[in-house]
Amino acid sequence: MSRTARLSLILLAATIAPTLAGCGSTAGIATPANSAGKTQTQAARPSIPTLDRAKLQSTKDGISASSYYTVDRARRRASDALWRYQDLREDWQRAWSDDEKDRIEQRMLVVLTDGGTDIRRMTANSWDYDDRRLNDMAERMLQEYDYLRREWQQTWDTGRKREIVNQMLIVLTRGLQEVANFYRSR
Image 1: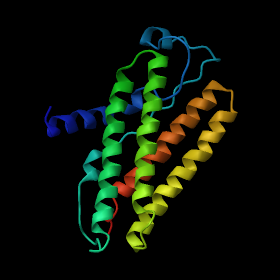
Image 2 (image 1 turned 135 degrees about the vertical axis):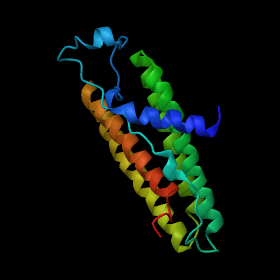
Image 3 (image 1 turned 90 degrees about the vertical axis):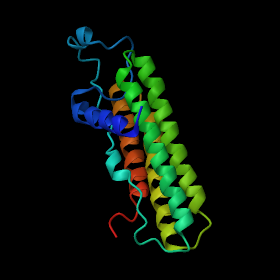
Image 4 (image 1 turned 180 degrees about the vertical axis):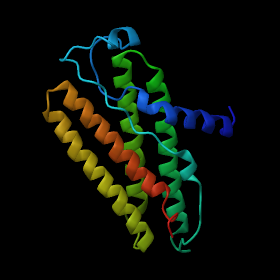
């Protein structure tokens, strides 16, 4: 599939995303027929975050010569993680069973946290101002994720767990988008 066609499909998915279900887990299969009669014990799935891939274009404006290589690698790694997340998001939207959605959500979290960890590792030993800013962005994102993960481990409420997973995905995608769009505002 060409990149333009893929981008068109993604943008189409982003426009209908508010009507689609979100993250979390319950037992059974969620189909339009049985989701209409949800009981109060079943919590609604919050929608998962969407991405605007058009904003992930590469720019070189304002990058210092000393940190261009590191910044470029970090931005590419963030974009790669976001592209993989978007592919998993499409798989998640096609999945009907909650168990399958749970497995996909776990892969989403792994892809996004691996991207953040790689960025933090790439920029950790540099003294360049731009590299330090990227390191701080990745560190802040991963610390927020760790806080939410600990909260997720301590709760037993299925609905609250769904909300926390959704918050984790939002924190990770927002942090990686900041890295991927670094220098676009300069």
